[in-house]
Image (cartoon, rainbow, N blue to C red):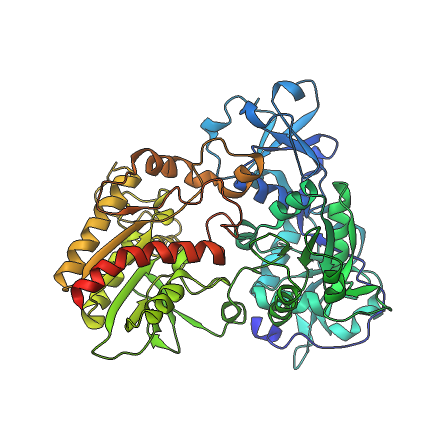
Amino acid sequence: MEGHYRNSFISFSFSQEAGKVICALYTLLGKYKDKKVYVWNTNRTSMVLFVKLAFTRVNIHGFVTEQEEHVGERYMNRPVVSLKQIEQEDYIIIVADEVPRDRIMRIPDSKAVYWSDALGINEELRNRKIIIYGTGKGADKICEVLSKNDLEAELYCVTKRENITCYKGKKVIEVTELEDYGECSVIISVKRERYRKEILETLSRYRGYIFVEQIIDKVCIGQINLIQNIDLALKKHRKIYLYGRRTAIGELIEEVLQIYGIEVNGYVYDVKSREQRIESIYTLALEGIEDKLIIIIEMLEEHLVRARENIELAGFSLESGSYTGLQYYTAASDSILEKVKTDLDILTGASILYSHGRPGWKLYGKEEEERIRILVLGGSTSSEVYHPENWISKLYYKLNRRNIKTTIYNGAHAGDDVIDELLRLLRDGYILYPQIVISMSGVNNTYYKECANQFNPHQMIEWARVMQPDQEFCSGVHSDESLYSFWNRNEKLLELVSNFYGAAFLSFLQPMNITMDHMTLWEKSTYELEAHIAGAREFADSANDNDNYINLMRLFEHKDEMYIDSCHYTDRAQEIIADKVYEAIIPLIETLE
């Protein structure tokens, strides 16, 4: 069971040389082995695909695009080319699953391969004895995959055997016994991200081959600027250093970057280690930080938080893109360490239970009658889950410095769109009794949810698909309303509900860079997401400064150091947003006073 992994980070004596190799369980099908491999397009969705392929050790030859503006440029030391330029080559173009077929009509059918059709079991598994790490549902799934490919595990491995000596007729060993079986292929079957990281840490010096379904969490890849910051380092001639001990993870990064002609200049840590040839991050920073990029390779959450603290104390920052990592290095420390509890919410899908606040609402200030009560709604860009201080916190202290005493309830949650905001306000607004309601949104309404009517909350749609994967579900009367019109109409409903509860209402169309004109190649690779292109364009074409909201959509276009990823803001950007909200809210507060 997955409970066997909970305390899986233990210490024991493997050989002191780093783990031999970490491999992807699935890699490019053998029939494509001798073909040149290209990635379709150069947007953020393409770069997620690039990372997935690169970490299976595929040598990607370049990026193919229909847009001539970036042809001839390079990204990750690979050229951007047109279809015409490669028509004489023996090639395939890997296409992200999110790309509709009508967008790749010009690619010959025999050349276009969707990501989900491109992969097969890693043939390296046929070369040595297979051991499955784990004995739970994940292990059962791996057994099925192996069986379909005429492979079979010889035995199972767990961290602590306890009373289990046999599983599915095969011997179960403890991890400390692995070296007795020589050079094997160990497949990590655990599904939970935390436990998988702990097992990778435990096996960091195992001399055999370690296979994992995903080396970087599939959701995390799209949320971090790993490849974007590495490409930026190349263009700015920055030296690259890995933060962490010399383990199989570090060797994997070095090997992947080497394929693309990118050198790792060394390893750094909080303290120097001559034995492992690791430099102190502080000593390195004394040489200057402008010409360096740090990649955090720490796997365990507490190590990641400590690494980030040391890196920022040394002078590196999220704003400048001078450090990056393999996991959620942009998240708030409490979120990384799971110190905040998130519960299922039967109305909106999920709500955070704050130690200081109400269920689903983070509290700023005290709940006193004489204070002005402000309620904030929005998505992750206004939430409490990211590392930079958010604009709500900054607004609270700006008002406090002016001796305006407020109680602010922040109900913004990751993934919330305008419907989630409306539902939260309808349910909790009467109890919280705000005098001012603020909505900061837009980004999460720039893609079409897979249902007949966009009013349905995203989380509930996902629940329906999980509960009844092979059945249709009712989602209301079909609507062809544009995404912008839908958002704007429901912002007006938010205002009506706010007014009904006796509150003034401020609506902000939040900053987003996805529809910038004349994007550079790097901007396109950072901000343009395939699933959001059409919807964001509707917003860009329809948004104006004369409607019922304050239009901040183009506030940060072509400006540096405003985003930490595709849409989340740096500390500097949060400060600017706080100033905009402050300017708008002061006249409302003056009427209340």
